[in-house]
Image 1 (cartoon, rainbow, N blue to C red):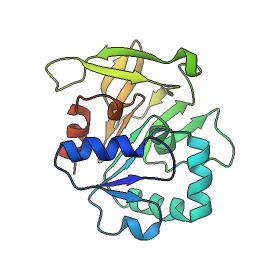
Image 2: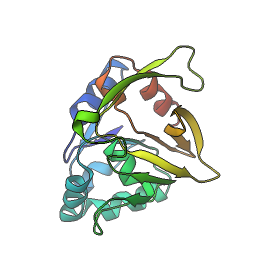
Image 3: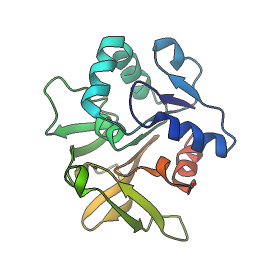
Image 4: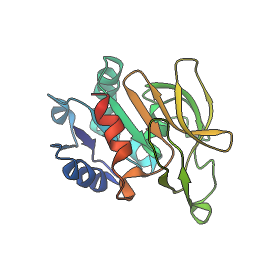
Length: 186
């Protein structure tokens, strides 16, 4: 499983994958995409990641791979880049258009508005302790998107075909179950 490693919380994802006994590869350039069974797009700063994806040429190739069916899991900024529509993004910001969702960057507020909350996730028998850090809000979803968890009226964990996205950071807690959901999709 590849982990996009241009910026953001990629190290935490590689640690979670290692805990699950899954081999991972840091993805920094186009050749790192070869032979992957899936890829994780980490949290971080979506505008910075977007700029680095353009500068490296990785954005165009990764978009093609995602549209060809490479399983993908995006957390926070990764989810933003997966969205069909990004509100409050820069005009030149990359959208992989890998999931039929509309998101608002920093929808829950700035850094000091970050929060933790136990959430119920479909298929899990106990709550998941989720960390929301400058988290995006999913404002709407397409008819093929399945909501796996919500906070209030807003979905925070969604799945569509081979794509999984979360507003929160499952890589920053010791609970491995959200990563297991992604791995079951590969």
